Length: 323
Image (tube, rainbow, N blue to C red):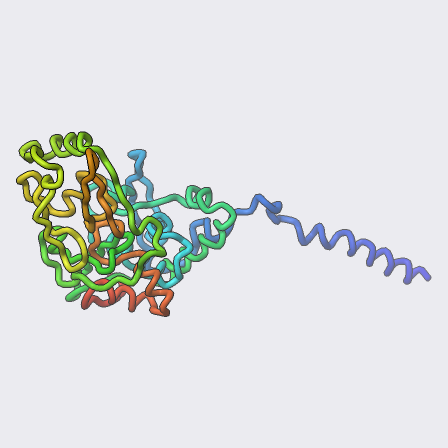
């Protein structure tokens, strides 16, 4: 009888104590931080390298290349994109870091301004933006960086200028047409994205007075007298659809200059005049050179891997380990 009582007491204690022991040291539900939103541990080509980043606040922050790339991919490409597209972005961002990193922002290697270098977002900012999807999205980006650890793009054994942008109007642009310098691996290629891209087609309307003011501030020599329909004329288009050059009141400008002047989403545009208004219709978003991010996602949906995607947009390049 005593033995039965002892066994019964032991079973009773186990029933109450075991859950307590199992829960000891666990974070309360709702307070946990997803592992993919914390800097990863371990070794790797990216983890063994250090980046000093100049933030928008003017402060500098040191981190591993792996953590830097996580923040770049999270800032530069929607985390909902296909995994292979995210991998292509990680390789392009790593290559961009290699070629841009230097004395420009000393003592930092690179800055977080997308207009100068590459965009970057902290893990906490990303989590705030993603809400309940933070864990899932963080893991996708972590996998994209880890799955391409140390890989960069090279042409004739040298890291390339890994330009990229949001979306193309059917083709990417030749670097010579946009920047004036021919680059053998930055040539125009078809790009498969289209109407699924948010604001792929867009328009900007302004009054003639607003247009005059913008032009006068940058190009005071432009003559904007006479009929409005003749203020912009003699258009020359690239096969990509981007405007190569246009006559603005007697001043010859590139499509990129017009885009910057008017704040257009793309240099692929047309213009119409009605009354005292000018309307600019654009297709695509960005400078148009190199890898289209939405195009990369469309290719990934077709089943192409990140190497194929990169080879599609950067002609004749190879994916090689970072030396």
